[in-house]
Length: 223
Image (cartoon, rainbow, N blue to C red):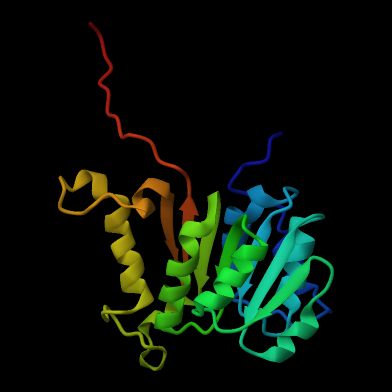
């Protein structure tokens, strides 16, 4: 029986529950989201950037999940994060919104398939990282921002419907993806032309890329 494309084998959840290696800190409901959007990359040697290294355990988890030939790249401001480097894992030290750091990564790894933002969760950092990296992902890449509940917290620069929060930025992207239908009110952008969908979950926003063609609406029926 062919595996449903929306289902997976639960590798990540089982890895997390049985982890006796380096620290991995995740909300449990994230694992279904990861499996849904990352499953198609398994065994394809993807290149993944994870913003925020923490205890280093998730870098190792992604390497084991995606399999041989993948490259996992961590970004963190803490110089001690370099200790988590290993075969298939490289860590860049610097801020997630520093264009020099981002440029250095893409200079070395020009074909990035996945970005997972688990960094500072500060509004400016989340938005700037997206602006620096999204357009540079592979045409079928995926960009995930997690812990977006901070978008509602004042101490992270957020707040309910607060201008400048990442959540409001992401909501605007819903209009941008539909710009072709606004009769010129909104311009059709590179984001419009390159994005398949935006998915919102509890505390997670997913942007999946796919080159878009001209919109058509034929009518079928009897002569």
